[in-house]
Image 1 (cartoon, helix red, strand yellow):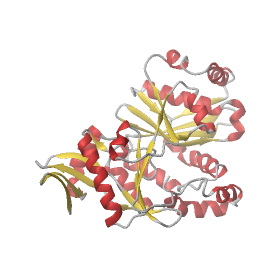
Image 2 (tube, helix red, strand yellow):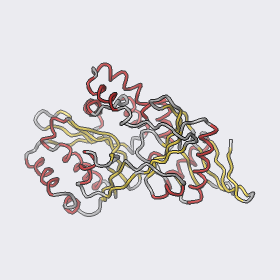
Image 3 (cartoon, one colour):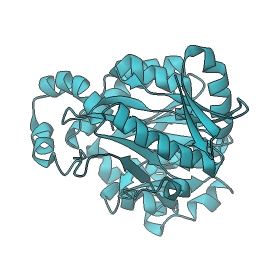
Length: 355
């Protein structure tokens, strides 16, 4: 089904529901104008692992040329309200086009979809400045941090604070850790990652999801693991995506008992070296709420700090948005719940969190 947008009786754009016949055309446009998360492979991973309903649409101009892509997933949040998100498990995903008129049309289309699909709201997670064209007031409580990978290792090191530089050098001087990119370390990485997520009060997906990501996108996925040198056990790690000129830090964590040895400083520095040595121009440190502990940690590296613009569209006057603040008591209970409970329930619950 195609939905058209007209000006003065002339149809400017048509929104056409995605089908597999468009896969090659979609990915070709996504690789030129979008990001890693715009690819159809990511759509398939979200559908197969979390059961979301795809609302992906291609945007054609009046001559039948693809001028934009609109990835969108429908699901239910923790309040069991039906919502749309572009996209779950993604920090941000700018509208895949290069024309402000198309962005304007997307805003109109979304407002129609909210009504026709009877959604509580649709959330677009944007990074660039074009959010204003959508005529909505974005939530800017989350930020991402972009490290420019230009210059030598020493030049990049000098951009960070003196304390950070000292902590990194102490790790190497005392030979605390070593690094590995062996994907066979996934099981050990996952144990550390899941444990840290629980300590933060968050459910997490099962390891099968990460295995499927690696299987479907092997050339774009990298697993950095940190090994404690005394016993060679995995004590931290980062799940990284490489696409175009950018390396993305998507998921990760470390064993907090190694915080006194500055494991996170070591881990981030190794990711910087990996990006630099493999020809990436940027390293995206990922999303953090303003002035949180991770916000301050990422800021010290001399990164560009960019506010993310989460734009929400609803026809309801007092729509309820899920947030960590709303579930503060539940988060505290989760931290101390038995592992056998959180391991089972968390894998089912995470689809409703839509992180």
